[in-house]
Image (cartoon, rainbow, N blue to C red; front, side):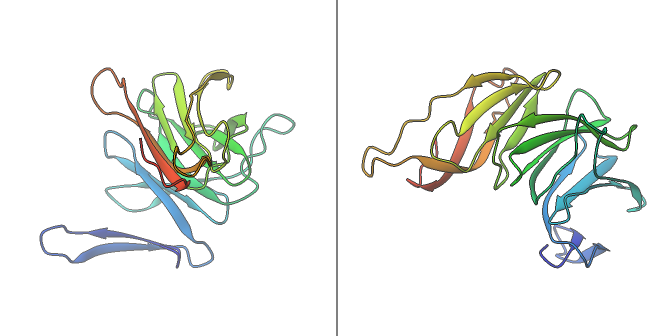
Length: 194
């Protein structure tokens, strides 16, 4: 929440079961590790916090990176995903035009991808491929190598036929079927979802 809290709710009863408070922060994203054992949050303070699901206790707070290699985030974080094929890695993106690759074992960022301007839930990972949706009118949908940080592809995103303006993306995600052959994305300006 914008008040710095992450709440766990019981779906059928509608009761709040637990609240984690970080009052000096605003939380903009949360993700669970695929096995459900850990979850992570990130937001205004540029740090990634990883919690144990069973105890709701903080496992690690990650910020910064390897000196002269990665610096971590320098602005708000709006998207956060655990890497499905590596239980120790997370990726995050935000307003600082970077995607950071975090390693829980190291406790900091271990790689930076420079370029994406992430302003919503628009980072996803499948295998070695990171998908980013950027809030900008050109080169807004891209794929990157998780391992090297190199750009794989600028995915063509046509302008709105009605308004002739680009779409600044707030959301991007790989499809969930076995082949992950589709990408869904949407945003503002031309108000297009594809």
